[in-house]
Image (cartoon, rainbow, N blue to C red; front, side, top):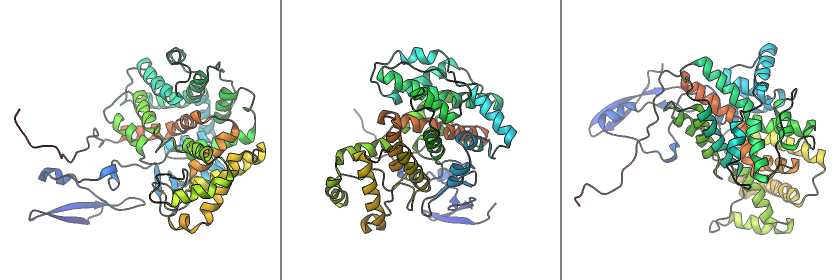
Amino acid sequence: MNDKVAKLNIEGETLDLPIVNATYGPHLVEIEALSKHEFFTYDPGFISTASCRSAITYINGEKGILLHRGYPIDQLAAKTDFLTTAYLLLNGELPNSTEQNEFKTIIASHVNPPAIVHDTLQGFAKGAHPMAMLISLMGALAGYFHPIKIRDAAERKHMIEQLIGFMPALVAWSYQHHIGQKTYSPRAGLSYAEQFMYLLFDDKRGNNPILNKAIDRILILHADHEQNASTSTVRLAGSTLANPYACMAAGIAALWGPAHGGANEAVIKMLSEIEDEKNIPKFIARAKDSNDNFRLMGFGHRVYKNYDPRAKVMKQTCDEVLSELGEQHDPLFKIALQLERIALEDDYFIQRKLYPNVDFYSGIILRAIGIPTELFTPIFALARTVGWLAQWGEMCDDNDFKIGRPRQWYTGPKVRDI
């Protein structure tokens, strides 16, 4: 324990606030003592506030670092598959061969969700957004699997494995209902990414190893990202001891926003708006104009002020997929590659550290594979479910966790009579 303190003078009284160290990253000042003096801190968006302790993911945005349990994200993407990374996030260590096989066998045993999933989907009109369906499916499963003994570690473990197994079918079937298409049943003997591709496309594109590897990498790169909006939402809901499926519904709802999980969908919409390579200079000029609301989607990041380490892996994967499919003739891909070149060479973007991010490349990859934009964010949810569950499980194991209850800066009127 660090014996250093931060001294804060409040109305003539000096408070000693303990300073604690993280493995990496800024030191933290514990401010709990402020509440005894009827003072709170004001920190919109929690920019400088740590809401929890976590040993799962570390990000250094200035240096472009992303670690899961200490392992760099590029090494995980190159040397593991999604379920191996999932095991790491959930358990803290990479599995040995026996543990890996057992985990994959358990997940594969849960590929068929209960019939209530199809019953719930029938309540949605054709054309409803798949994210809306996923939120409702989590609610339906919360009712189906209720109550859950949240304090029971064995029951939590079973629920986590079950939900990871369900997710490929939940996402694929939601989209198929969206377009009014029949659903495909899971097939035995497939990897996680292969199973999802098969559920989505049957044999049309579900048996291409390069495309399956691309999906697997997308899942790894989106599996967890520290205390983002959706993860914080899952933790906040979970702090009430709510049914974990309900917590997942809350996370999916938060992820749906275009400022969070919808960013790669926004990239494709932006490329469609640009329409032709000859229009790129006009849109670059608009992006540089402080009086214009237009933004280049897929460039820069709230956290990363350097090259997004996930984007490096995605760029390589993007090149592999486009080469495999021969899709470079698509005008949107030509626009994307031209924008990428400009962002990496133009001083305006370099000085502002507006590098292409993971959403820029993942949107291009998903489009090339033939996945429609309505399914981009649900695939993000498919990947991030593992991170949400790891964070939720870690919170449940923390004896010090409390129900989330942020304070406010009240700016309304003083007491008055009617």
